[in-house]
Length: 86
Length: 273
Image: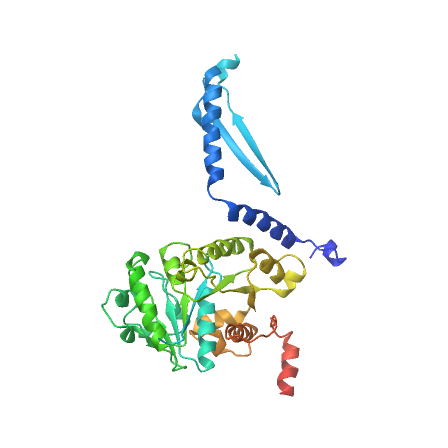
């Protein structure tokens, strides 16, 4: 019990839980594996393009998907070799 | 063929109360006078025998029957208190791969001839044991705690019920009932536990009962007597009995039985009776 709950203002972690579940399950119910396939194809394509100009370690390319409500964002993180910068 | 109804008690997640619920509901059905068989599908990790207090009387098990090493009648263990309640135990020494689809089909078909209700206690997970437990069911009871990981796993199980069961393959919809266990009215009211409506909303499965968190459940498992038999007046027992009446088709509103208020209240109630 904190002071907020004493005054009737609720600390509603349950509504956070409900929200998270609704978003997650909407994705899981629709998920047919195509997301994973897309990510791995994108990763290969991007790697090929970057490799034309820069020598990169294939393991240093990270792709991340983030789903927030209706929006899905794709993050690409490529570590360039230190030798190139100097 | 008889009119037996085969019910699978399933959840995906472990530790939510499948075995407790199977024992409580099977006993409540038997108390109504039906011929009931509880089947433990958790091969390798059996526990329904322990919860029903039959652990010392197990001789043969489901795997023996599936492999033709014993007849069903040899393997069935009669309940000590209710003589119309039987247990078909799981094997403790084998693993889930010892079960075959044809073997399970023939066991379930034979049980249908002897009983009114066959209640299948599913193992946790979504592998062979769990899919075989639900495979030949006519109805499903989905057990969830009001907690995110449990609800998510139930959603996955609902997907399997609609895809991997005989009922689904025949183009029908598996009737499903949601049983919420370990519910705490006060915490849900304060907003720090998912409320029953939230869980129903998310899973879109009609509610068959809400079992409150209760000390009587552990006490019942300690002594090996299902809570609906050991302590009829306990809130958990009342909730299971209500759920059972709904399973039987009665149209009664879902209530959440509560623990008695205090020692003082108990004292006065005791005196008044």
